[in-house]
Length: 419
Image 1: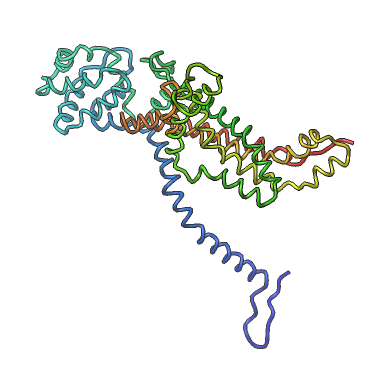
Image 2 (image 1 turned 180 degrees about the vertical axis):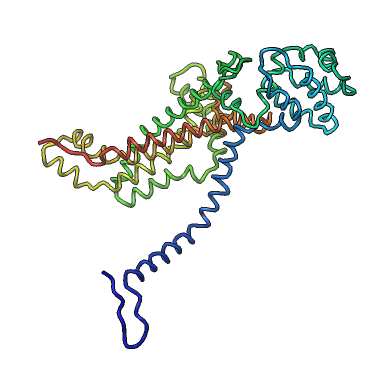
């Protein structure tokens, strides 16, 4: 029970529990005020752009804005035969209006993604259609300009791009498309490239992560077990790559791995090879350069995890008769799992989005998904497909983060020995 205490003739004092709640609320408000700038910064620079990317992956309003009457007329079209005369007349009116407004290129660019040659078809029709056709003659007038207006696939392409949202870009990012009947089918062989690109991206990322773990684990163990003076000196060499530009480090590997580079010259001087090895502009160069850049991101989480392990555990295992290998595998290694998981996840996620290193030291068959995202963003300005590829990559990253949470946080962090 809470009670209010009365002192003299004055008002009753506020109960202690209520004062504690007020103090706790005031503390929470102060904490929120301190982190509010960071939350706003993340909202504006991280969550906002991601939300915009996800929206662009399904946004499809270009054709609807340029050809509104045609889109409305096609809403009732069954898709089996050619549209009626009313739809042809609506298209003619939209084309004339779009030519006056200068927006024909917007719709033709979007429709060309669905059907090759649509840019030429729509631009040529806008150029040759001088006036609105007479009532009942729109069909003949448009087919006279270009016979493609008499094909069902042409009108199916317009209806599929009539928005306001679409699955076209997301399906294309998975090498899928819709046929004339609206069913989802595999994309043509000459257009199906993104599954291979995603597989290549994940394979390179897994390989780089495994190499970083193999190379970084002994280094982290050495840093964690050496005296503080030597450990700090070695840590400087681990952190040294952070003080050098990524572009400079990548270009340095080009100098080292090229045909007349230091590595090939050294191998020939040792008599191990007679002709230069091809170490650059291929998968080997990409993996080596990315491993060098990302290795510190593996070492630091491992080092942090290993520093928290008390040496008394290994001594206790040895006193109970365990061999060094058994003590390491059953006592020490399980306690490093959080560091292994954190470092692997960090390296893998960073490797998934790498662009500069594969672009400089890799060949045409070694480019990762980030190259295609950059290509569609800067070269062809196909924001829809670039956003869809980014959305698929984001989904894969979130799934991996979820798997990491299940495996690492659900695993025991201490080992044990049977009697």
